[in-house]
Length: 274
Ligand code: MN
Ligand code: MN
Image 1 (cartoon, rainbow, N blue to C red):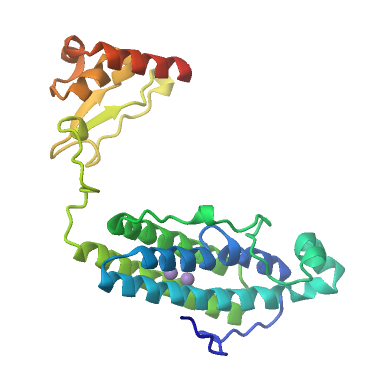
Image 2: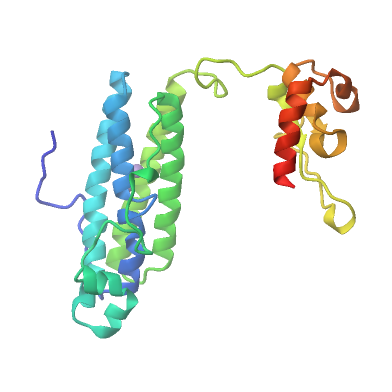
């Protein structure tokens, strides 16, 4: 059950209201990486979670996000309030001024309505935790940008608090994921196809001024990596077909192992792209 305590999680002091900032703050109220999205994502993941320890964490953090929604909503409201009566302020966002009376609504900074499509809920705990880590990183960077555009010390202070908590959550989700003790590349139950899983397709190539660098790094060399040069462009679609066959041969040698059904499928895909 939820219980509302009649005080904010963090005290909000606003010196001079800035309707432009108020508008930007809506990104963290009703936006894709905002507090309502975070609250709903974690709480609903929590409802689906069969691991009691991590369910507890998801519900704790989901609930804290609701408290953040209250803080950022209060902050936005204080900055938007002049829109109700002041023409210059109202001109910053007529939607909020005229339709919303200078109040916060579940919209982002562009006035787009909040949507459950923002939420990432898969019902697979480790996959959900990865989504949550990324969501916290996005929330953090949005707060950082809001702080950059904020001149009011009291508002900055509240934003710093909210930004910090997102890193705290990121730490908790990361530790929860690691504590599952799963191989980081083992997702679900079905194993990936051997050989194919370690092939890096060098799919962006060019010549002359358009050639640029074919970058090499730990994302495509060392360990189990095998680089496959422009498989569709250079060798036709056979590369992909034989890779599906899992014979492990690279480059031109692979052509002979092609399977007709896969060639047909890849060829129609290539035509569509052309
Ligand atoms: Mn938050
Ligand atoms: Mn958070």
